[in-house]
Image 1 (cartoon, one colour):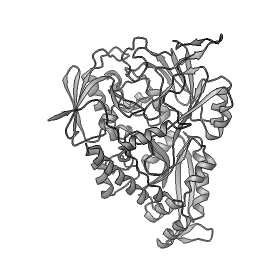
Image 2 (cartoon, one colour):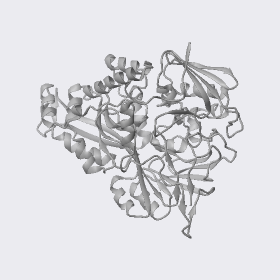
Image 3 (cartoon, rainbow, N blue to C red):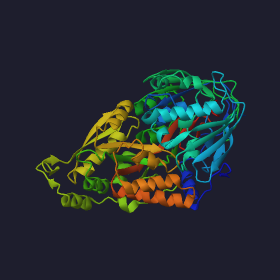
Image 4 (cartoon, rainbow, N blue to C red):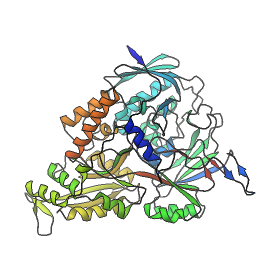
Length: 544
């Protein structure tokens, strides 16, 4: 038996409080710029069609297949190539129709039936129909660990049934409350069946055909990605200003890893917009003829995630001592800017079902030393603690996708050394970072994850999914499974709250600060918008 649901999600008082946070200074309203600009004669001009936007990314996407994309930089690119069954309103969290005109959800959230619009096509001419939806969901499932996010979205996937040409039923082994929101993400965006027949590694390099407002014109690794407007596009999200073709004729995403070079390229007019504005560049850019805008990221804060299978990080006392030894306020005040805030839980404050766990993250050096003393870690001659002849040294891997990563960790390195803990930093490319995590070649991994739905905790910490942290914790797993199965929002929030606390108490994650997505735009760029996950949407963008 099915319970028909309207395409919306009820909001709780806590949700409304968090939405108010997004409207605070520096966390601007969803549109990044005004809707009109002044012409050279001083008269107001409206949106215009045409032009090429040049946008500087902070890291190489490494893969332009939306099903395999693993970083925000990759998703800025892939969002324009693919449409999704649904979209999510960034102001309210409400799920709205897109390629799906309506849906029904079984009472236990184990089956989802979607009815599709009939006019959408892929850029290679194939129809966006029920067979295409089935092919996409089957393909994401078959990717397994190659789809870091998709493997969690489709956990327990039984298959997709083609009911008729424009109706599909997606079935899971059990309740999967997060799946509707997952259908709004680019990870579950739709590619043409012809593209899906290519090998997974080939799809990473393109070419690909999606149904989105832009087509993939080319990808040169470590250099650039080129997108062209699709002129016959006419089925955009209702959250956009128009469902028809995009205003920009083309977008060039240029890979510029150095934050100072990105900022200089913007102020000199070599690029029109940049991602990953470094905190030290914010003040400088605000004094130039550019706009600096940001929005808090929901999901998992920037944190040290423990590899619980490593010889040292497997010790709970070490992980708990790290929690107490890190001074989060000092990291934000010293390395970052007022756009950022210290972490207060294992979820960011803008995530649904967030609970404040600040007491568990209090900076307490004396407690850190006591925990290590009680666990048998004794100070060595060089100040680094030792137990059974093994020094308390932890290898930390970090990627190059966010400029302050190394500076933040170098400060944390100094903080925790006062407790007798040595962190050895290993700076890796994004591709090498992902390989190291998969191989378990680390003690602690630095990073964050972005998603509005709290099920991101299951993606990060479930022993039934990728389990990059090698966790075996039945108590935590019960809560993660229970929140995924709960169809009542209050009951689900309770399970999420327990899971958040358990993750911190066991030290599986040492959260440090909440990520904020900060961009800078030249004055001629208008109507780039944030989606619900603080990623960018370029359909309405235009250049004056």
